[in-house]
Amino acid sequence: MKIIILLYFCCCFENICFSQSGWLQQTSNTNKALNSVKFANSNTGWCAGESGLILKTTNGGTNWILQNSGFNIKLSSIDFTSTSTGYIAGDSGTIIKTTDGGNSWEKTNLNSGNNLTSINFINDSTGFSGGSNYDEIERKYYFKSIDYGENWDSIVCQNANSISIVYFYNSQIGWIVNWPVTIGGASLFKTTNFGNNWVSSFFTNSDIYSFYFVDTLNGWMSSKSGFSINTIYRTTNGGVNWITEIPGTGVQINSLYFTDKTNGWAAGNNRIIQATTNGGINWVSQTSYQPGVNYRSVYFTDSITGWVVGDSGVILKTTTGGILTGFSNSSSEIPDEYFLSQNYPNPFNPRTFISYELGITNYVKLIVFDVLGNEVATLVNENKPVGSYKVEFDGSEFASGIYFYRLEVDGNHIDTKRMILLK
Image (cartoon, rainbow, N blue to C red; front, side, top):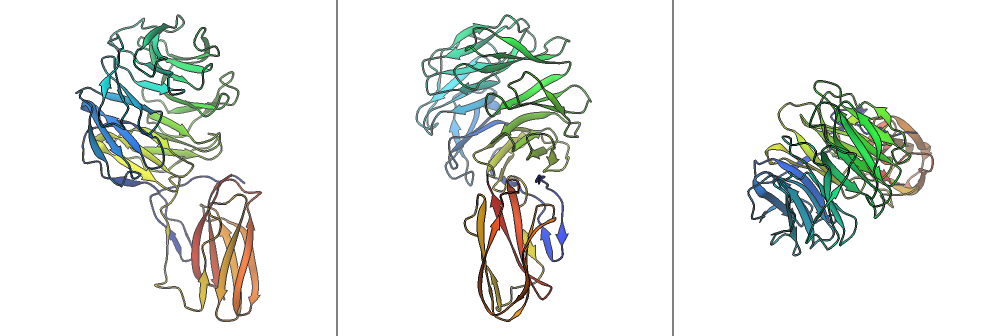
C-alpha cells in the first residue's frame, strides 16, 4: 500500500477533524528573503539570505539569532560539516567560512567575480562551489577546495557553457548544471572520476533550477520554462535514464530534498510545497497556491522534521513530514470509563503495541486509518469485559508514514491517536 502525503484538507471520518497545516511559521525577525537553510543536527541550523543576512538557531528554530556576516551581498547557499565549521557562498565570488558556529565569519581565497549559487563539502577538507553571471557566457569552470575551504581552484569543464550548480556526492561522483545563459536549454553533466572527465547526463530546452541525489543512483531534478508546467525528473540508475514526473503546478520549483529514495519534498514559488512518499512517482501539495511569497530552500534532518525558507523572512517548520499538525475530538472530554494509550514504540518498525482500558463491559472496535481517512486495519471488533488490554499492530505490509488509530465503544468514538511507521 502506498501512503500519499496530503495537506490542506479537512478530512472528517466520523468525529475526527484534521487540522489544515503540517507546516508552522517560525519567527525570523526579518523581512529579507532567505535563500538557503541547513541544519548540522536536529537543533542547530542556519539560514542565509539577502544583504549578507545570516540567522542561527540552537533549539530547532524556536528562536533565530542574527549573526554578522560582514558582507552586504546576496548569500545563496550554505553547507556545514559540523556544528562549528560551515561555509556560505554568495555573489561576487564570495565564500565565507566559520569555525566557531557562526560567531565570526572570514572570506576565503577565491579569485572570481561569479555569483556563486551552490556549495557543498563531501568531507571536512574537500568542497565545491559554482555559479555564473547572467551577463557573461563561457564560464566553463567551477571551484574546488582541498584545504578546508581556505583556498579555491578553478576547475574547467569544457563541455559546459556556464555552470550554475555543482554538487558532489563523494570523492568520485558529482554533477554540474549548465545554465542556459543563451537560448538553447540546460544540461546536467556527470563525473565518475572526481571531475577529470564530464559526460552529458540530461538535456532540456527548459531551465534546471534544482537537483538532488540521495545516493549514487537515485536523483531528482526540477525544470521549467516560461509559463510551462513545472516538471520533476527522476533517475534510479545514476542519470543514465530520466523519467518525467509532472507534479501538476505551473510554478517554479527552487529546491528539492529527499531523506531516502522514497520520501522527498519540493519547495517553490507562490508558496508551493509538494511531497512524495514513493520516490517521485506521485506528488501531493502540502500548501495551497498563494501568489507573492516564493519558497527558496527546503531541508530535513529526518523523515518528519524539516524547514522551508523563502521571501520576506519566512521560515516554516514541520515535525510531521508536512502532513498534519494533529486532530481534535468533537466531544469535550474522554469518558472516565475508557482510556486509550499512546502506542509503544513510536515511531515503530514494523510492530507496535496499543493499550486501552475499559471500565464498562461493551462492544469495542479499534481501527487503524491512513492519512486519507481510509480504514487499513481492524485490530479489535468484539464485545469486551472490564479490564486492560494490549493489542499488537504489525506494519510489515504497510508503507512508511503517519497512521491514526481510533477506539470506539458501542459505536461511539472515544479517542484517536497518531503513530508513525518508519522503515
